[in-house]
Image 1 (tube, rainbow, N blue to C red):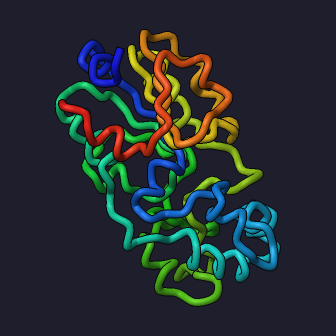
Image 2 (image 1 turned 90 degrees about the horizontal axis):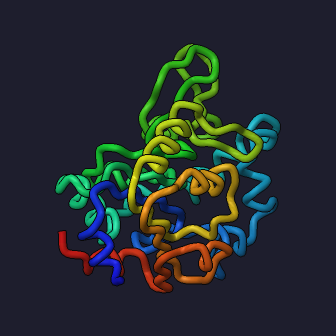
Length: 235
């Protein structure tokens, strides 16, 4: 069966996406040849984006975060737009994403489970007051709340746990759908990658530029760009 035939035959589709969904919007991923892990910094990105580094080297964390993690010029691509269209048509029940760029919501998707948080939400670690992305972007050094506390991005750093409500929502969506499309993810980042074990539906589809460990478990594997592939779907 083709991807189009599977979509036509499905009543509830869930999309599970990773960094490869946003690369077509100009946002670098972590592990590809030109990704963040292959660029030169004083510390490895994985160390900088850890809870320990945030606490111990807060200014250096924000220097990197402002430079590499905030991509406000990025716009939703064909993948984001098609998923929003599928949701509006009643086909797609949820988007589960490992990305923190907020592009799914910007494209019009309403039910989005952001497993790793969002750069658009930030909060004071002292009083809990929430701030928009401007609080980080327009500040220098360590961004501070009016109460004096440090403003922290509402993103899940290494060594931090995922939000329970977000995980529960994602698990419920995956467990209840009849088609799961996994796209743009290496399926190596846990616990997020482990969520697909809850899928018991009819069609498991993978769209990814490179082969992954779940290729042999899928009903359909497409090695191509996510946006180009989804953009061809008729809703």
